[in-house]
Image (cartoon, rainbow, N blue to C red; front, side, top):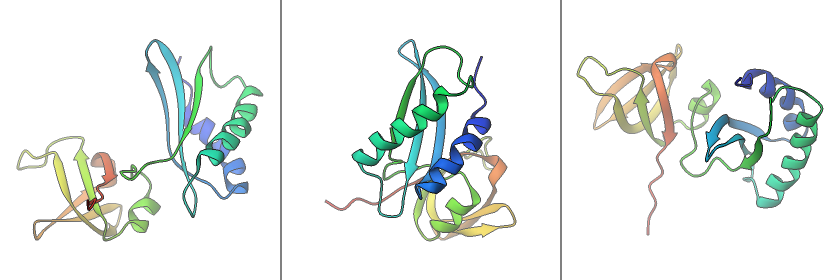
Length: 154
């Protein structure tokens, strides 16, 4: 039985708000024969290893008081990374004018599913993406995955 991630998110949100931490993503996966509950967290000046350890104890204690997760699992707390996932409307507003990669659930009329360009904003539940001087609009519900696509200078 897969746990209800929305219920888990609602349960930990007050704790995260108290710590001024943002929940970027939450995953429950089977990896190498074991289950993993993975929280991707961020905060204003970035999340540190010490933050991850501290929040792991706090979230773990909270989860231990419930029966939301059947059986054994590993709890992981992580930074969202440079190529963080964008899921919520506020993510698309916050990262306006940043380079992103978008993968659609289904191909557009031209048969394309993958796009890379600059996020120009959010309009009526759709993102506006500039790719090679062309503008595209994708409804949020049609997006399979969107991620930051930072240009790393070496």
